[in-house]
Image (tube, rainbow, N blue to C red; front, side):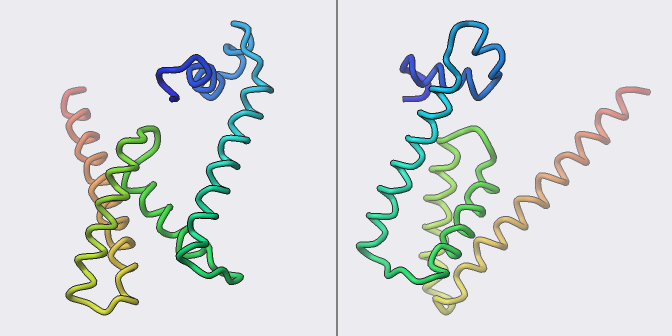
Length: 137
C-alpha cells in the first residue's frame, strides 16, 4: 500500500520531506492525520486480537514493548520486509529455545540477539572506518 498507491506515495513524501511535499501540493496536515488514523486503527485491531488470547493487567504491554524493540533493533529502520523477517525469526528461535531452557527464560534470547546484532554492527562500522582510513593515505 505504501509503495504502490497514490496515498502511500503522498505519505512517504510527507515523511521524507514535509516542506517539499507541501510545495508540490500535498496537504501535509491531512497526511499526518491519515498516518495517525491508520496507526490507531492498526493498534486497535492488534489490541482486540490480543485480548482473545491474553488477559489485560496494568503492566500487560511491557513484554510486547520489549519484543517490538528487539525486532526493531534486529531489522533496522525503513524496510517492512526486514521487520517481518526479524519477527518470524525471533519467534522461531524463542519457540525452539523453549525446548532446551525454561519458558520464562526465553525472552533473554531476544536480548542476546540485540546485543549480538549491536556488536556485529559496531564491528562492521569499525572495519569500514579502518578500510576507509587506509585508502585516504
